[in-house]
Image (cartoon, rainbow, N blue to C red; front, top):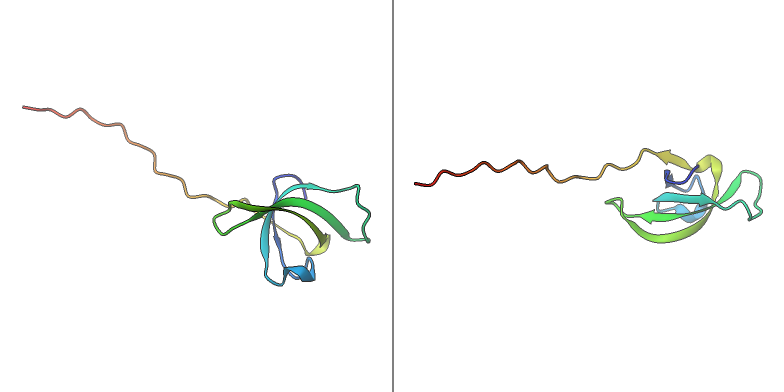
Length: 88
């Protein structure tokens, strides 16, 4: 995992995720000692629209973390240039 990755955390990553969440990774926390195969990550929890709603530090099993493609946000349609209006 690297900064900017969006990951899907389910019970496969840790029992705390019985209700799955999406997280945008800020960084892995290497200074914390963990069990083999586990890692601490810091990231933003995302809502359904892909907006950050909470900053969290999470202890997860690396094998259970699923990296997702970045969510595609709906964009506004581009403005078309206005044509002059002929009056009279």
